[in-house]
Image (cartoon, rainbow, N blue to C red):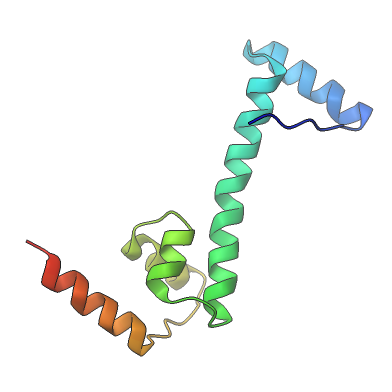
Length: 100
């Protein structure tokens, strides 16, 4: 997929300088920046949807691209209570039944 973006001149200069210092082309550097920010955006979006009750705990962890226990830990670190729904409990029982 190809995306075209127009950056302000100041941002363009910084991007060019950092790319030069790191020995990368600008496209590679932009891709790295987008990937890093996309990862954080996914986590924040999943947390928001979970807090609003829009998705289950397991679905939020999946949206965040995190293991369920890691996502629970992230919520704990942010002092966000776990709101176990009947769907969460059923999903956990099903996961346990499928485990070897």
